[in-house]
Length: 213
Image (tube, helix red, strand yellow):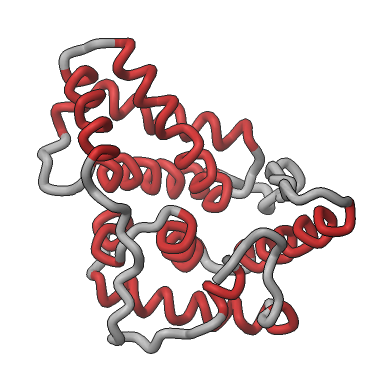
């Protein structure tokens, strides 16, 4: 993942649309659950919540950077909008784009209310599955460096990096989520990656254990 982000800095205007998640069965399953939500079925909502919780949690942790308690509050606020305003989804975008758009706006509101500096101490660490303490320590050090570098980005730049590389969304989807033209997303991505390259230049030739470009 690290080399994937740092390997090439795309110039604004160049074609780099990002990887859109494949359609088909997963999208159909989400829409099936969402139709139940629209009909007021609590069980459908609970299943949709469990489906989106890990994705939204990761996104909001990197956006808000204030620990899990604040993130859970924003995540729950997001999903309550999905429950209460399900009829507002008009089907012109993917369901995931609509839900992440709600989460993005909720995150911006949370950030506007924060008076304290970002705190990374409560961010969860994911241990490497490879055996041996040395590989695990190396992975955790790389992850920590990437977290620190991401926190140095502006909120707008952090959002496009997170949505593109960690949520596998296209530039068109990101543009709809953050409310700007696709060309603006490309420009933000260019400057975000250039900034990350400067912050992580010494790691540019390394890979976290178990990851590939």
